[in-house]
Image 1 (cartoon, rainbow, N blue to C red):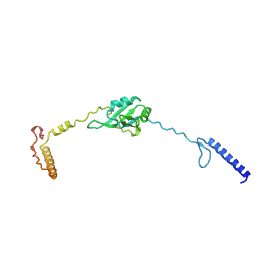
Image 2: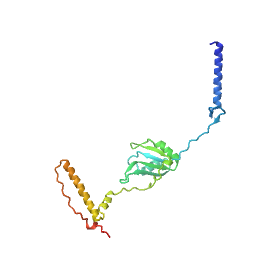
Image 3: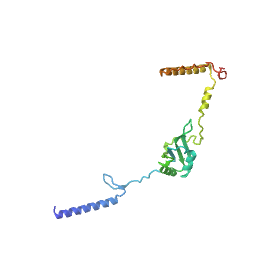
Image 4: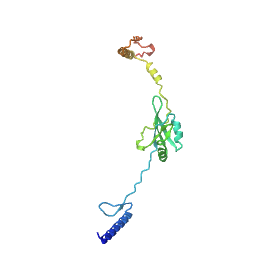
Length: 213
């Protein structure tokens, strides 16, 4: 390749780079269609602002209950509602709950700040719940002071209720059937044990007889 050819190639390269830079400046932020034609500007899409105010809080430590949570999270902003999931029978915490703030901005800050926060050797899990995913029955009874069921009292009423003669007979048959199975298991285990006989009557007590009208 001669000297003249090299100079001509350098000039063509300079022109191409200059044209590309001018074109990029003109079309910055614009969209050039593949088929050619005038450039058009793309519409600017704004990200939708979050309107979620409900937070899921997981891995709640023992002893960190409603009053403690209200005092701790109340430093971020006004709390609208708060509840901890509890066992229906015992009333014990199930170590997760929900909290609702009045402001979506405050809820977002709490989610970003408190997620993976170490509290009493528990790493909290805090997530925003979109409004469409909030269960309609989530806040039913949220201010209810939980009273665990007295299962002993319930069983006492169930056993001490009035029965008809047929119901009493079925109850005795069930007890005898259970005793028979127990004797078989003892014999199958090779244990030399003589079970005492069940002493009782098929007739219910006078105060527990339910007569038909």
